[in-house]
Image (cartoon, helix red, strand yellow):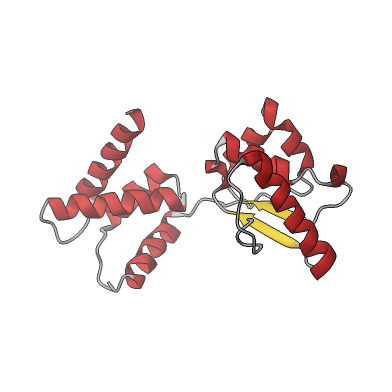
Length: 183
């Protein structure tokens, strides 16, 4: 953040936070700017990184802040913030929004896979209906899980010398994912 605000960052945590706070205050007071920091995949942040975010939000005893931080992540982020030593950061969250993502139907999953293949330049049928049914069922209609299984099924079909992902290739992908989950 220090570099993004035009400052050479200090290397010691104890001096870096005040440096960033001063730079943020200068943006607000001198340039009349409000800085917005968006952190995607925030559920993957370490404890130390979340603690740094907390420190950055500790400005003027929360009366006003020259910084807005958007923590964007999976539902596990919400649970992490509610645990013991992250409570101070959790209390500073002024707005929470959850985007509900209903699972895809089997027909939608088929279209979803087909559109991804079209973006990759393929318009021919690469997945049998049985393969899509197996992938959809195991993924419970969740797009990321469908993506993972479809890619693994494509690899399984290729390894098997097949020109189309059939139910057998999809089952191989499901078995590999289940094995990876237990490792």
